[in-house]
Length: 105
Image (cartoon, rainbow, N blue to C red; front, side, top):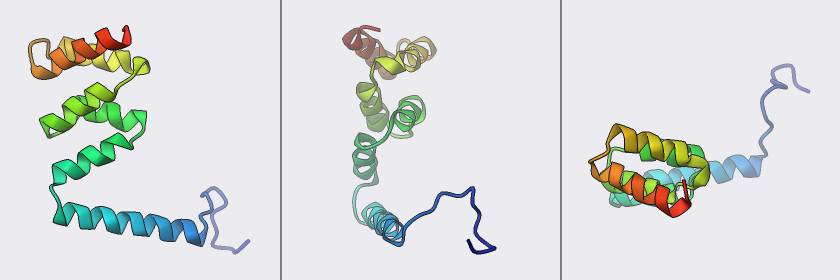
């Protein structure tokens, strides 16, 4: 172990680091050359539960927020309920209510 290695940090392989750099470069390229909203929607489809919940609560673009609400599963029923309580008459509240009905929440 090198004296500068932090044993609490996860070890990344060189190939893993290169792959992450490539993904980052592709993301930046896409954001510069495509419709950013479309790029965000694509990323949302591959996101984990936490980021999907965050997007459902706070996404800047309405279409991204609505898509995130539609992607939420039963484990996120409390997030949907929160949206419904906070914005009952908005398009987001209505989407949350509909999704709750679909997932049985």
